[in-house]
Amino acid sequence: MKKFLFTFTVIILGLSIYTITFSTDFVEKKAVEKVNNVTYRSVTPDYEWIIEFDKGINEPILNTESLYVTDDKNNLVAVSIQRDSNKTVRVLPPEEGYNQEPVYTLNINKNLDLEHLGKYNPQDTYKINFKTEEDI
Image 1 (cartoon, rainbow, N blue to C red):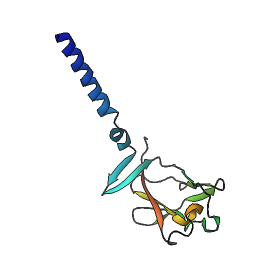
Image 2 (image 1 turned 60 degrees about the vertical axis):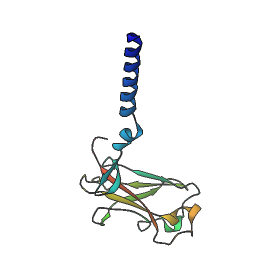
Image 3 (image 1 turned 30 degrees about the vertical axis):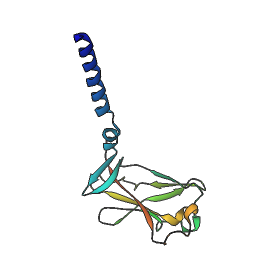
Image 4 (image 1 turned 135 degrees about the vertical axis):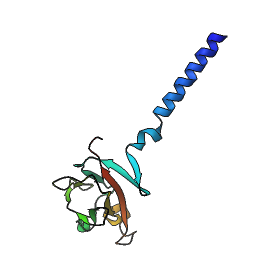
């Protein structure tokens, strides 16, 4: 009976440690953080955003006014836009890469997506906050 209780306790303890260590919250904590109540993703300084539109890109408005990056002071960041296909766009980082201090925002005009064309105000944007870290 003592052997059974000991084995049972070891198994429960092991499962508890495994659950805590490999839980989704623990794993995702490194990828998504909060700074001043702003949730952001961690990326490398030379990270390229790849944006895929299921129904295609509204090409007439694909420019730096509809797809751009700003820093935490709302200044534009010098990124480049590269259309890979009718459905995929890359946002290339600045030549020197992103700095580690600010939290950046990738701004995507919702009307860029042909699937949602005309459903949004021209100023409606989807925003992704991110910050750079060297060791991701």
